[in-house]
Image 1: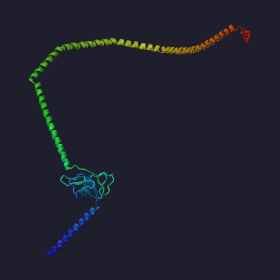
Image 2 (image 1 turned 90 degrees about the vertical axis):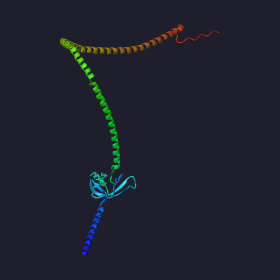
Image 3 (image 1 turned 180 degrees about the vertical axis):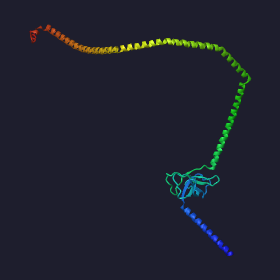
Length: 321
C-alpha cells in the first residue's frame, strides 16, 4: 500500500511538472509572437503591468511596463505587447479606460481607418488623455458652487417676484373695492346717458350725410357730360395743333435756312469790305505819293523853268574879276 502511494505521488508530480512545462512553453511562444508598441500619457490612473490591451473592445495583448519617459519626465511611457495580427494603423488612438466601474484600468485602442497606413512594430500609437477622477471632482465641485450661486439668485428673484405679486394683488384689491366699483358704475351710467342724448344728433348727422351724398351723385351726373365735352374739345384742339404743327415746322425750317444764307452773305460782304478797305488804303497811299511827287515837280519848275527845255542845267556864271 505504501509502494502504491509512492507511485501515485510520483505520477502526480510528473503530471504537474509536465503541465507547468507546457504552460511556460505556450506563454513563451505567445510572448515571442507578440509585437511591442508604446504610448504616452500625462496621467496613468493606477495602470500596472499586466493590464489588458483592448482593440475595439477585443483583448489583443497586455501592458508590459509603465514608467516615466526618460526624455520628458512629465509624461508616462507605457509599453504594450500586442498580437501581430492586430490591424494597427496611423488613425488608431489609444487611451486609458476601463470595461466597468469596478474593474482595473485597461488600455483601449480605437480601430482607426482602413485606408490609413499600418503602424510598424515598435512605433508610437497616438494617445488621448483621459479626465482623471481629481479633475472630475474639481469640475463637480465647480458645478456645485455654480448651482448654489444660481439657486441663491433664483431664491432672491423668487422672493422679489413674490413681493411684486403681493403688491399687484393689493392694487387689484384696491381697484376692485366697493368705492371703485361705485365709481365705475357712475361712469357707466354717465356714458349711457351721454349716448342716449347724442343718439338723435348722430341720426340727424347721418341723414344729412346721406342727403349730401345724393346731392354729390346728382352733381357728378350733371358734370359728366361737361367733362365729356371738355375732353372732346381738348381732343379737337390737339388735332388742330397737330395739323398746324407740321406746316409751321416746315416754315420755321425754311426761315432758319434763309437766316443761315443771310448770315453767310453778311459774312461774305464783311470779308469783301475788309478787302476793299485794304485796296482803298493802298490807292490813297499811291495818290498821296503822286501828289507829293507833283508838288516836288511844281517847286522844281518854279525854281528852274528852263529844265523843261534844257536837259542839262547850265553852268553857273563866273564872277568877274
